Each structure stands twice: as structure tokens, then as C-alpha cells.
Image (cartoon, rainbow over all chains, first blue to last red):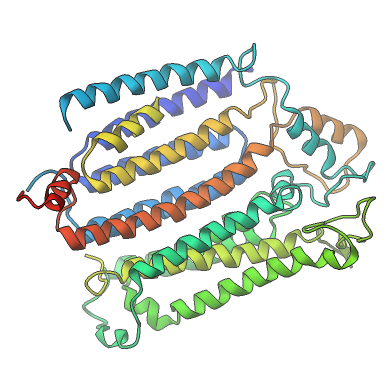
Length: 85
Length: 262
Length: 118
């Protein structure tokens, strides 16, 4: 009974870890931004399981609606693929 | 980078992993998280909204908002200062005078398809209603000034993406108006924070304490429940945060090349 | 674990925008770690909000004994908003770097600053 929320957060952290590795190894920068947004959703659900409703509302607006759009602005004015060339 | 430096960085990071796991699992002679929380948190839980022992109470049943504005108000004021300095830095780098910018607006060429524009029209009304509700009811239900301000700032962002930046500027948003509204929010914060000094109280005092003469902000006005000064602080913080983010978005999207979304 | 992978991304990868993406992941992971340490290990914990405006004695005492720690949540809210301001400033700096050097790789920028050719 005590351990059910902790198992759920462990599962969510594993999902976040997989998407973080995928985001850093990716060479196409737009896909990296989408992977980081999915990892952000996993963290928002973890805030809900750990019983912090105030932080959940702030983090949803910031991590899903502001960070990917600002980085997409930066990508659209510079190069899209990383690497030499 | 050079091969040797990469191996050194990876060894250093493995050291960080092992030490983090050690310090998280074995906090002070036990596991963590624990069944008994720390003394300071327990003090805040005991004394906010304790109507049977009103020596240290703050008038709102929401613990996190009371900590942010009543027990630890100076942290929030310094955080507002940090936001202010960041926006000054952005404006030094990216400012562009907006005098002749509306001549470039061409209604058919800019913007995405009609489906996206219709969806944007529906969504921004919902975002505006939800964000004002979150900001005004910050002392009863979860939310408060920060959540309302951040949620409100998403609406002009979607307008910039679906339509173009010139449509937003022709709607009436501009850098000067945002700066004026932001300053109004800051003035509200400062007046309410400095008012108890006239009665020999201390800055940001909410309710009556035994060693000062300030009678405290009212908790009830007529049939409405107002938790001291918390509702006005939430309104001020909502204005500050939302106008701050809107200024950042306008500056970034006008920076290079006229500002179309490519 | 995610802290180390995002730190690896910040230090090793040469593209500037990849570094900014890894920096946002690092900040979010640190905030989740703080909230994870503020949990209470009892069978039925509750969030730190009192559900009614006129509580009775036993409702108040059960709220005191069974809710999670509210102090780290207040500090994390402040930290999230400050992170947004810093990352927005860094993005404007990155666009300025591209405008001057016409490349975003860190190795090529160092070579251009020394005066050699790429």
C-alpha cells in the first residue's frame, strides 16, 4: 500500500530516462525538441502522483507551451541539422 | 572533443551518479522519504488556518500560497527583481523600433491554413478564461499568480504561430503597453507590502501579531471571504508574469529578418 | 541518472542549441528531485490544502498529521519561473552568435576566433 506511488514514479522516471537519451543522441534538432516535450509530460504526471498540485499547473504551462516554442523559433532562424557542413 | 577529455568527463559523471544515489537513499540514518517530515514544514502546517489558536495564523487554507506571500514574502519579491533584470538584458540585445512595421502586413500571404486559424480562435478564449480563474482563486484552490500568468502567456504565442506577428501587433499588443501594465502590477505589490510600516509593523505583514500595532488586513468583506492581502498580491503577480512573457515573445519573433514563422 | 545524462549533453555536445535543450532537461530534473524528497511515507497521504473553510478539531488534526511537506513546493515554483527567464536570454544570445559567426558549432567558433580558416 505504501509503495504503490513510489513504483509509479519509478516507472515514470524510466520513461523520462529513455526519452532523454533519445533526445541527446538525435541529430535532427526538431525531433530532439519533440522528445524533450514528451519527457516533460512524464515529469508533469510525476508531480501529480507526488501530490503537488500547485507546481503541476505552473510546469504544464511552462514546460509544454513555452520551452519548445522558443527553441523552435531559434531553430527556424539558424540551421536545422547539427554537424559540420 | 579530445578523446582523453571525454573519458575524464564520463568518469566524473559516474562519480556523481554514485554519490547522488548514496545521499538520496541514506539521508540521516534512515531511508528518505520518511514518515515524519521536517520541523519547519510541520510548523507551517500547524499554524496556517488554525482558527483555534490565532497567534501565528495566516488567513488562507492553502498552505503553499501562504508560504509564498506571507511567511516568505521577500523571496518572491527578489524573484520578481531577477525577472526584471532578465528582461532588461533581452531588450538591450534585441530591441527594434516598431514605427513602420505594419506596412509589411499582407493578409493572404502570412499565416498558416484556415483549419489552424479556426482552432486558434477557439483555444485562445478558453485559455483566457482558465488563466484568470486560476489567478483570482489562488488562496482557496491550487494555482495562484504564477500559474495564471504562465497560462495566460501561451495565448499570444499561439496567435504568433497560427497567424503572424504583424497580426498580433495590429491587434493592439505592443512593447510599451506591456511595460506599462507590468509596472502597474509592480506598484500594487509595493504599496501593499509597504503599508504596515505606518503602524509600526514590519514589511509584508498580513494578520495581527502581538508585538506590533498593525491590526491586519481584513479577512472578510461583506459576504465574501478574502484571505488578508493574498488576493491583491495574486492579481499583481498575474500582471507581472504574463506581461513579462509577452514582451519576451515579441522581442524574439521580431529579431532577425522581419519575423515570419518559416 | 537523468541528471548525469543531461550534464553529459551540456558539456560534450558541440552544437549550442543542443546544449540549451539539455540545460532545460537538467533544470526540470533537479526540481523533481526536490519534490521527491518531500513526500511522506504513510498509507494515505494528502496534498497540503485544507478542504473546508470552517474545519472541526479532528479534521484539523488529521490534516496536520497526514499531509506532505509544503515548504519545498514554494521554493520550486520560484525556481521554475527564474529558469524560464534565463533560458529566454540564452536563446537570444545564441541567435546573436549565429548572426556574427554564421555557424553554431563550438569547435568552429573557437577556430574562427583564433583567426584560422575552418
